Amino acid sequence: MLSYVDRMCAAYEKWVVAVGIFTKKSLLAWSRRLAVAAVAAAALPGFISVGGGSATAGAFSRPGLPVEYLMVPSPSMGRDIKVQFQGGGSHALYLLDGLRAQDDYNGWDINTQAFEWYYQSGVSVVMPVGGQSSFYSDWYQPACGKDGCKTYKWETFLTRELPQWLSANKNVNPNRTAAVGLSMSGNSALILAAYYPQMYVFAGSLSGFPNPSEGQWPFLIGVSMNDAGGYSPDAMWGPSSDPAWQRNDPLLQIPKLVANNTRIWVYCGNGTPNELGGANMPAEFLEGLTRRTNETFRDTYIADGGHNGTFNFPDSGTHDWGYWGQQLQQMKPDILRTVG
Image 1 (cartoon, rainbow, N blue to C red):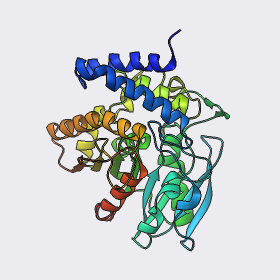
Image 2: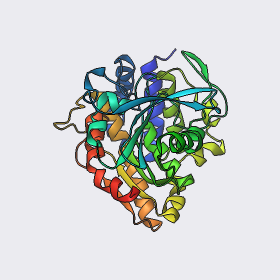
Image 3: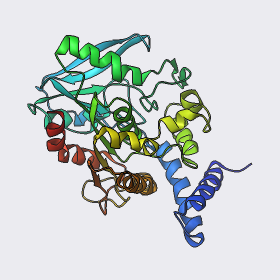
Image 4: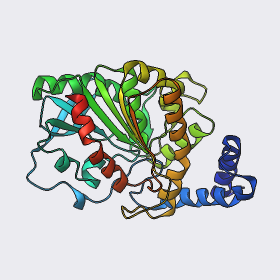
C-alpha cells in the first residue's frame, strides 16, 4: 500500500503537470516538498493547513477596548452563534476566519490587533466565531466532523440573521458593509459580494483560493477540510461535478463583481518569507501554490472590464497572519471610503 506521502505526491504530480506550474525536471522535488509540507502542516498544532489557524491568546487586542461577546440567534443553524463585536459606527467591517476557525474566539482577534487598528475608525468590527472548514457557505448536508455534527448555514447567517440582529440591537446598517477574509474565507468574502451587492460593497481576499472548482482544487480542499476537523466537501457542495462548486467559485463570478462595481482588494504573496515571519515549509509552499490562481483572477477581472480592484502580489509573503494583518491595515482607508 502506498504511504500517505506517496499518495499525496501522486495526486499533486497529476495536478501540477495539468496546470503547467512546474517543468518535468523540477516536478518530483516540488511534489515531494508539497507532500512533506502537508504532513508537517497536519502535525503542527494550530498551524494553517490551507486555511487560517489560530495561535495563543497572548496576541489578543489590548484590554480596555469596547469589545462585546454577543450570542446571536441563528434559526437556520438551530443555535446561538458567538460574535465578537466592537461598536464604532453605523456601517460594519466583517472579519471572516480561516479553515481552522475555533469556537472560542475569531482568529483575527487571536492573531492580530484588528480591534485596535479599527478602534474609533468610524466603522463597527464584526467577527463571527466558529465555522471551521465551512467556507461560510450553506451546506447541503450536516457538517459532521471529529466533534460531531452541526448544521452549517453560514451564508444565511451572514446575509440575513446577523445583519438583521445587528440592525435591531446595535444600530448597524445591514447595507454598505465590508467583508475581509483570509485563505478559506478570502473566497467567502468575494462570493458574498457577488451575490449580495447592496450588503457587501467591499470584499477583501487575502491568500484566498479564487478558483476552487478548477482541476484538483476540490481534492486539495477535501484533504484540507478532512485534516481541519474531519469534514467532507461532499456534505458542503456535493461532488466536484455539482454546480455548487461553480456557484461558489469567485473566478467564475467575476462578471457579477464587475457588474456590481464591487470594490475588491486581492492579495497573495509568493511564498518567500520576510521580516513578518512565516518562514516554514508549509506556509511558504501553500502561498506559492495559490499565487497562480490569484494572478489568473486578476487577469480575468481586468479582461472582463473590472476597474475597481486593488491587486497586491509582492515578491514576498507566506501563508501567515503577519501578512494578512499588514494588509488589513493597508486597506483601512479604502474600506472607510467605500462603506462611507
